[in-house]
Length: 166
Image (cartoon, rainbow, N blue to C red; front, top):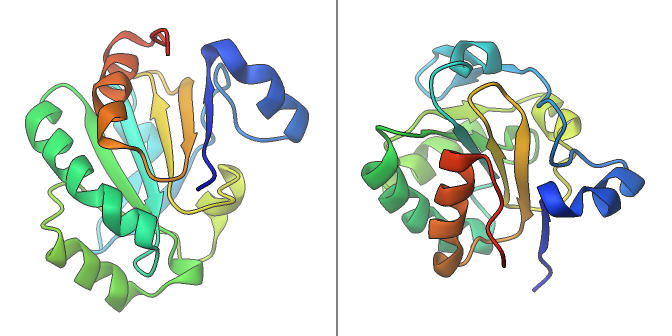
């Protein structure tokens, strides 16, 4: 398993590789949900910190971590905005809907049908998770399935905008 974590304390490797990294302003996006509602980053800003999880239905690590994201969203959804982005350009709308129903995902699922989110956020593996402040500043990028033990750390980072000692 290959996992990379970029947080405020480790932005240099991400910068050198040209990836979205901690400290940057998150790129804007505007995508339709599986329920045909348009959601943009700008519509989410200013309210709560944001956790964006980019995934594909056929991806075993995505299937593995989704139940943990569902639990976290149910527990912390009043304090944090959770958003899923299906990488529809390499998946399908019907499979994204089936995935959302199978796992009872309570948060919006956005459809990246043209790969614009994937490109802007430099999604090079599935899944990838991005933690943003309520102003849209990236505070964490996690590549790969987020282990259950990391969920509290991710929540801490989202709520405080600070990286805990890991």
